[in-house]
Length: 216
Image (cartoon, rainbow, N blue to C red; front, side):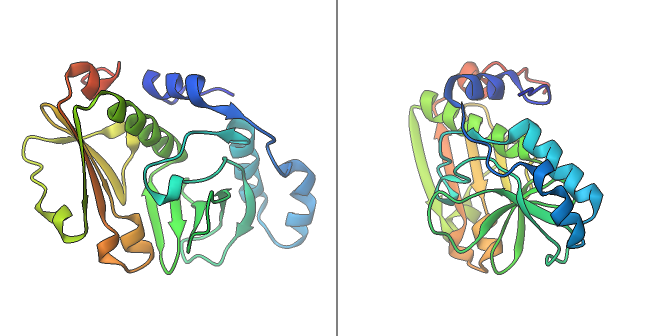
């Protein structure tokens, strides 16, 4: 696997904590049946590329979305989403009212009652996992905020963390804190109380960046 589009922090995270398991269905073996059922060749090509790079990768669980996908694995192309052709990004770790998907523009999303893109790419999801693991390891205090209290978080002096490619989920970096704001379940399930934020405070410069340059 090559991860040239990830930060050093994320690559180190995968190297230290990632495991390559059975990659699941071989996309090329299923190509013709999918084509016969009307799946566009370009979609199967996207699935094959995803599987070559990410297929079988098992990472530590996320603190939200019940841990995220059990492993990354392309499967089940689907065009029932209004956004266009998508495919499953990997199976759930636990029973959830939504699945994990790669959307038509490459976004990493969950799909419940509504389509909710979390990050603009699977790389963004992996970067967010790596950052959560890093921040939890270095923070002096971790605070969880839910529901309406998320709106009261003061982000003055904070800047978005670009590498996570945030959409419904965003990360913010301040003078001595990192804040992760997760709104995917609120969007996907029409559940405002599902908003969650994690505040990692008491961080020094290494804790804030973990080897990622300030201008990344």
